[in-house]
Length: 215
Length: 215
Image 1 (cartoon, rainbow over the protein chains, first blue to last red):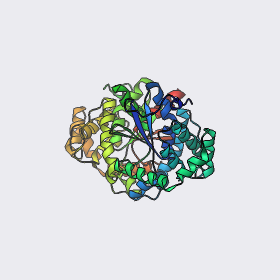
Image 2: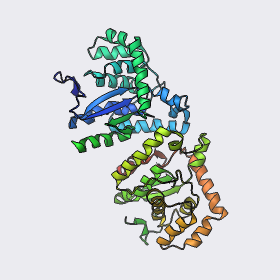
Image 3: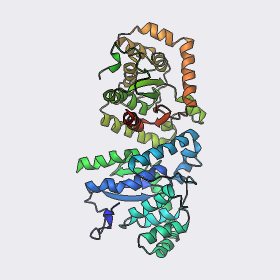
Image 4: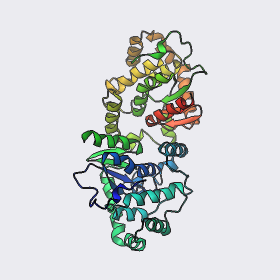
């Protein structure tokens, strides 16, 4: 996959003159996997920028009185979701292996991605962690997984991880998750085009179409 | 909309030699509205038959411990769903008016549709009732609504309604809803192509594509 944002001439990939889609996602969410993997390649032909917004779905589910993912709490829906993921990954040409732990709650990846959300490598980092979780059976809650992804991208892994484990990064993720709730987000992925919300990977195409039709 | 099944030469629209999609739906379900309105016109070019399977989602939700639709129980999701319905109806070219009562629990329409599910007029009847509920603010729980739809279709409304109000028709709908639960159905619409399940209007195109690819 080509990395559009790695163009060194792009200083700020979310400059206001460029059409932008906000991508709110949780690293543990199966349908977020589909969107995170495909959003930049879908946006590229139209010059749309992705504003990466990692957050945690867990606190939002808990505020609804749920103790886990609806795919765990509702067995029939969960059974179907695994079959659906196989089909959707085949449709989008994405690798897929059902994770042994679901949902895999990992705090370091979203802390790193949130701190790096304006960096040109954020998309590649998110895709790498998603692929580890949903196609390679890697334990993404381990520091090693994040270190490996950062190292593969040629980045100073230890420095980035140290910052992501410090209090300001932890606080930033809590604030981000409160922002998600305040925006009316109840699931992931969720997209925003200006103030218009689109829930689910199944609405990514509609969200992009609304941007393209205005261009 | 042209009524393919009204061809008097078609004795049994679900004859086994013809590729068939089962359409399990609830008259009160917003996403069922989208699928019921479009499924026959989507199937027509490929010669796919629709096997109409009306059922009640309420007992299935109650078995999950829910007292109402998730669009009522989860306010943020419900708020979004009304916006999404406006957009989806615009996309599919369907009329839309938010119903004053939601979910509108009406027993007569599914009892009539279940008894008529092999009749050539079943699709037209389902669309008419759906449109009354979701585009014309008609109280579809009233006997008058069903009578009007049947009369418009040139059918002996009183005879059909009398049969649908008798014990066997009531029992048939209870059995049908138990069949839905036994098949693993947890929402509506749900489609089956042979034993393969597809949940949601968003998967209708995938379900049809799987049938067409085998043809």
